[in-house]
Length: 69
Image (cartoon, rainbow, N blue to C red; front, side, top):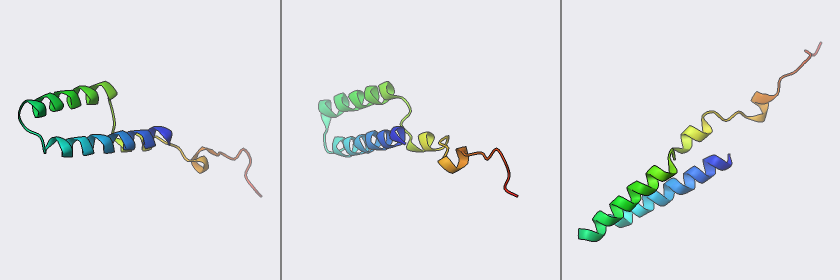
């Protein structure tokens, strides 16, 4: 769950950065786009759903050894 939360937080950061970048132009925008691409590639997979998909809840983990009669 911590990985999912972190991925969501970082993704929200990138979304906000991209919105703000749309308000810039020229050389600064080109530089910022490059930096943002580098940051995304360095961090790797950030899709929060890819972190939650393999997660197993406590109920799913629990396996009874004996059946109740």
